Image (cartoon, rainbow, N blue to C red; front, side, top):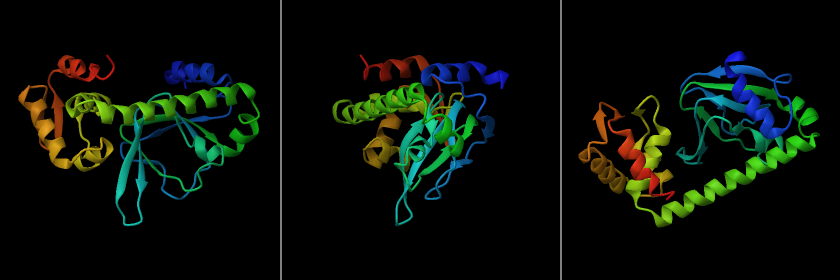
Length: 215
């Protein structure tokens, strides 16, 4: 608990309520599922460290990457509110540490707290704004800028391992266009391909490319 005390403190400040007394710390390894598709969840997760991915599974068996989660975000909040009955796959992209609260306790102690509800409303509002911004970026910025930002977000210890097919769909571009843009980044010696993954060679220049979106 002490190792993640700062992250917990920030969450408690954000949601205006003590969380340590109603949750427990759990760790999830890379590739491990926090929530399984269409099986519901009886837990609310506060992500203290690491990154996770949310997938939507289609009837034909295909899956779509729809969102990334990082430190400070929640998993299972829509189920807590009774909005989402068919849960999506939530998979650890890196090793993750979470503060896990049983939904029954969350309903009894968190949903009855005005300060928590205010924090949750603000959190959901910010998520909506971020999704709107991502849609706007896809319409107004070149792929090389968006891909630079994506690589920086998805990398783990300088290594990028995401699947091209998933990323092309996530960024709303063709597979061919994505490969061509990766080649541009390689030609500029910003990344290098090593086996099945890419290694970042020049993070500063990659950040400069990504900054064009937010300038």
